[in-house]
Length: 407
Ligand code: HEM
Image (cartoon, rainbow, N blue to C red; front, side, top):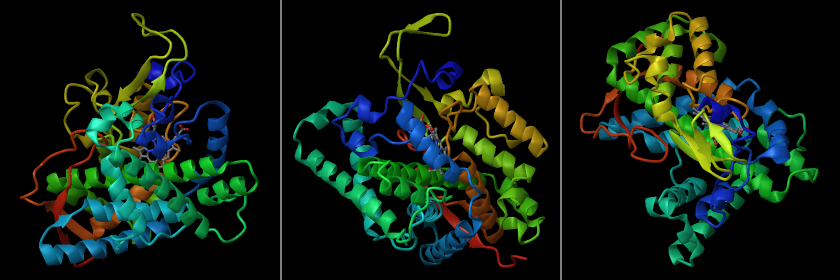
């Protein structure tokens, strides 16, 4: 696995736009910072890195988390249980669009927002198992697929124009906002309209889906483990009120850190990806010859449970495996990533560029959740993970209880 992730020159990306260029999925994702290769990728990465690796603006996450919690508690009052996914998706969209793309979409608390509605229509068409397995069908003029293509085009255009609306000022190339940087490059003629659309879209998709899934999985594991939920709550309560929303202070808490790492290990949001193609004949390890043009990929779910690395209890949720101190944990995190025993963020040259931002935002969100509410699984929720596509607790339903004394 380490060979595939490290040797990008032997296993370059070949995303949907290369694999099945006529498919609805390819129209959706296109050529972007995740799928591009060579100089195109280098340029996209140079545009995105300074913005994605800048410090997170925690005030945006704090405001959105409080709004989210108000909505969730309202729903709990009315229906005695809360379906988490739609509100958490709107929350994750609010975070990514405001903090990274620099545009307020006001999607949180507005389930009828046109972009949310479009997303809800598009997703089942893209993740339709028949069309995922038989993408060649998209070559045929099937009316429902033609409709899907029109929806995707509309979504991309509306998304890019919403990003533009948020930037009526003059965009600067040295801005730390990704939306600004993309628009400045577009304005200077260095980025085509197509690449502006595809990179806005991938920021939107990668930025909100993965973060949404991490929150859902973390809520799920802590709902199952009430004692652990209380322990980590107490750990956060030990911080001053200001530090409870400070990503750096939260990153120094061992229990919170180990719970987040363990959730990411056991439930990698992108559990399986097949988007690399051998550039020439390559020996995989010592015995397997892969001919040029062979598709390869990875399964994060099983790789992250590698028993040789993690031991016989690799399938067990066990935060203490990460060590006692945050330094130990970060060291193991780096070692496991470099040995390809923890590939939730890919690792190597094409490692996730949003990792730092995602972890900082997640710590703040979890801290506010834990200090404001207690939660448990709704007993009528059928305990199931999604069977394919992104990995998460399926339609997670919780029962929430507000913590009255927040001091
Ligand atoms: C829990 C959250 C996240 C997880 C688990 C995650 C995971 C991943 C994975 C597995 C890849 C490699 C994809 C592939 O093999 O094709 C990736 C790439 C990437 N991710 Fe993330 N991601 C997360 C959050 C984010 C966020 C918030 C952003 C911000 C927009 C982001 C931006 C990117 C970018 C730009 C790349 C491409 C890196 C490159 O190829 O140079 N990610 N991510």
